[in-house]
Image 1 (cartoon, rainbow, N blue to C red):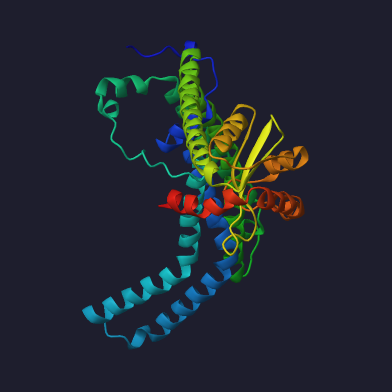
Image 2: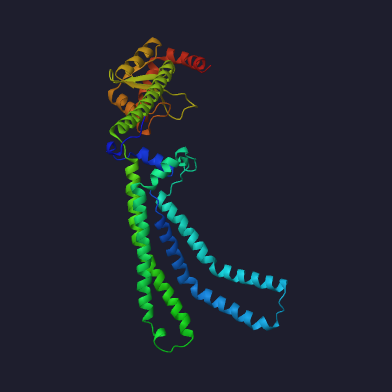
Length: 367
């Protein structure tokens, strides 16, 4: 089948489609945002550590030039001096390197929504197609990307021009100043230039990310047929879950019916509810619900109890409460102890022969 025309994709992408796209690494990615985060981190780190860097480099330079007349230039001494330079500069600019690396990782995480694209490393054959690559060179996305690159150049150029005009008005270029003022001038000029550049790139990054977001959303849009097919697949999963729930319910009902012949008593409504209880002295802390049901299933419990001679007691409020709050396989709630104790005391007096046979019946059921 051929490619689907973009005009046919009129529906917004579903959550499932967006999740699959994130796993493939298909989300809005803006290189300008990465540059913005990195530059901001570098500027922030320099603002904190630049005085320390300048002091350390000045001390190192002073020591080198002081000791320089007494140094004999050999391969070993040259190597030692080079190692010292690399060590000092590495220690000085390590905070900046750490900050920019962290900023780059943060920018990637922000754009991906802090998701890991597990399928993005797969090689796609269509990306190796030269015809498709040539077509992408003249696509709308390429033209927009070219426009953003021109905008970046214009922004940097405007910052340079504005910065140069501001710097030329400094007293350094019009009047005598102390030598120490040169360092202060370079520091202030660098921070001013980087701040303006950061602001300009922020505008470009915002436009770039907005375009990438729009483009990615357009690429992920779906046709009505795709939305319908996905909904059908989801409903199929729902049907499967419902079937599993029905199977579990039937298995539970089968287990409850198998336990009815070993009950001490079945409390009924008499027609709407039926709850089978058992209590073994020394084993159960409270009467246990063996089975419960309403309407047709309650009728099956009563019929099975009658077939095996299990005592049946009609008590509408107790039956209703046992069905509502009782859990199969668990003891009854404490608030029902008194009512159930009275029912058990009655059946123990009225059905002594049944309870004489009940231990053997339970033993046979467990065996």
